[in-house]
Image: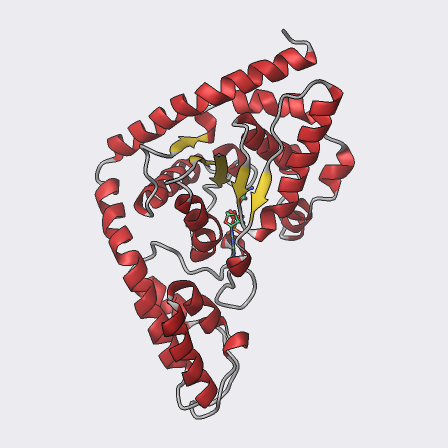
Length: 320
Ligand code: ADP
Ligand code: TRP
């Protein structure tokens, strides 16, 4: 089965990205044909500095490879190395109703955050539709916030197939229910734009500092605590096995353990999990030419499926 997902190089990746999208997508590499790409055309909607864009793109490449992306199995590419995607975007925008885009929460949320309204920001879901349909992906692993964009992709594909001829496979989202939304250190959804993240590859000091800032209620050390309503526990659960979770849960319920100690447990778990990946990332960062060749090879492999799709779509609308 073909699986595709992408991530924007619009800031340092955090554990919301990791548990919501990267880990589930990477887990599929062994059994499926996985396509993962760096959505730099998308990031242009919010990143307006060329150097930041270049650095962010490289960082995402290093992050994915360090977190276990196997370039022999997975097709890993930069979106802009496959400009055919933008042509497909135009063909698809013909069958995209305005109303569908006007209803998108993500666009409205971005305006509410003060991002200037642009045509690219508004038509972002059409580009995302093209990413998905271009590779004829069956499954798209994403976090909950992308669910509506997947509905747009499905609607547009159905409409195109009905209006012209059946060119596109209809994709299904894959959302990890148990980690649908990873909370940030302030308890809201963890997001680059809320300044509430724990970066995957921040320094040890930064990680510790972020974890120590996690917001809790003001219960004293002695008081029993509710693990189901605690941001520290919600994050701990992502790293720990069920035995470890039960142990911490019982400490919470009995009382006698402060939030500071729970935070220390989380720091330890975090380090255990990401330390080997951090080492790998450092090695890769010292061999940028190798990373570049992985991306070039990925683009060439992606084009092998994307060009035939584009050709079929061009023919369906009467361009060839
Ligand atoms: P951000 O909100 O930090 O800008 P993106 O929108 O770039 O993150 O998301 C990239 C991917 O990571 C998407 O698939 C998204 O659903 C997932 N993701 C982002 N934040 C979270 C979160 N807090 N919990 C779960 N998944 C998330
Ligand atoms: N919109 C996604 C995000 O912000 C990134 C993305 C772009 C994507 N194209 C995609 C995700 C195609 C999955 C499939 O997270």
